[in-house]
Image 1 (tube, rainbow, N blue to C red):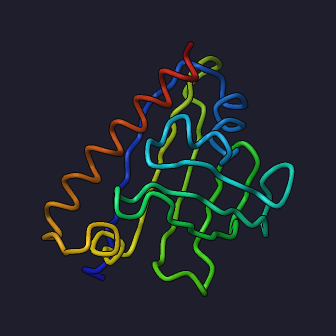
Image 2 (image 1 turned 60 degrees about the vertical axis):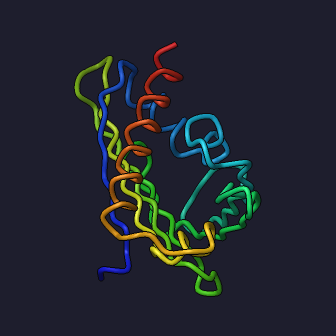
Image 3 (image 1 turned 30 degrees about the vertical axis):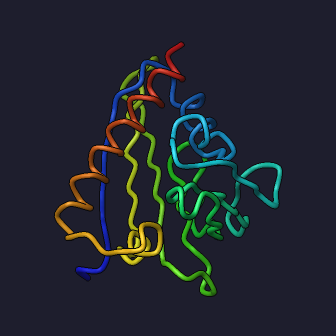
Length: 154
């Protein structure tokens, strides 16, 4: 699957598991810690298996509003949430968030993002070598997790 970008990052957050999980499992919060997200809509009040999620994503100045549609395929309260694009979407993507307690006041979040590399060409109008896309996406993941940590530890 060399057409898939697969990035995973983890960070320790000095907050209890319940608070961290409730924040990261509410995809409406993504615009605060994932820079390209303009807005997220969910068809349920709280995420649950089967929830439908629509992300309005800034891909580039050429495509400032790209809409990606997901379904929640796994939800384990205070442990994990996984969403995957619906079949009709142009580019496949999967988003996994795992939260585990380190102790009573700290939690570890592991965030995995997988996406069809074709979205890069769609956004930019041209392809980039996979190693460059991986490098950039890894840097973005680190920035996202640092922003998440800052928000939750405030």
